[in-house]
Image (cartoon, rainbow, N blue to C red; front, side, top):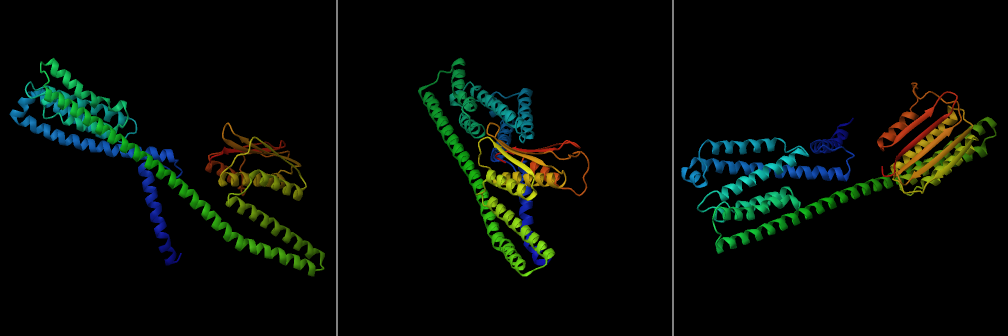
Length: 427
């Protein structure tokens, strides 16, 4: 490899490394579906927000430690004695435990929700506990708005946001139980905070839905751009092949016809005829491949045409049958089905000494699958036996695996062979 080639390949290798790193970080494969990609993005977004919650808890725990350290403040909240420190360290422990399971797809969300509810309960207790200046007069009442925001950001579902909304009526009820009759100003405070809660929920949920919609649109756009790039590249390759290899084969056919007019030697004339026939077969195969690459290939017509050509060339009894309603298939599926038919017919003619071959194409709309069956009355073989130097069956199996399909070979010595190839229509 020259130095210029190495330099040209460096950006591609760096790009592959970045893509592989991103896939591993998101636990995705190269063939990940848009839904899997979206789930990975949602999980990564939740983890980032849950980590932000953990850091916010650490700040609150720092303030809590300061409250415990100042006698006047701890007396105001009634946080005295070993129980206060035990409660403080319990909060610290479940906060750390929550941080350790954040990355788990299921447990991370459940534990985060439970610990956030515990934080909310502790907040309500601290608001309602002081006999003087507590309840709706508490300086910590504004913290309830923060909890509403956190619940809406982490769990933007109607039922999931209920706990912070219950904090205000519960605080009001505790004031009544503690014989603290709310004043007109406190009722205004309750109304004001309730309105702020609904405003926060509306804004956060609205922005979340817009973000999800934009993300889905970007994923769909990326998929469309990817498919468009593949189609354009196939069209470009088709043009290059047609103008290059197609012109060369056409030229070979013309020269063969010219040589056939010049020669008088029967043996040489036979060789030229075989050369011309091979070139014509090659150019027909080339045209068929170009149609498949340009996505205007009719699979059923292509298979019927190939079966007819094969029957005329080999003089074998080859029959084609189609069942089910034909549906549009992707170019990859069409190419796979056509190649399997070619390989199966070639094996039946070359190795099986078959006289009769049945080809069946099935469109199963209910299962959204397409199947191809090639059955011959040849001498058969043992599918489990090692066949050195024969790669046709291996290629068919690889095609099936790549497209999420299935290849079944039913054969035995003296009993013919049946090749059944099936795959999803949307592969």
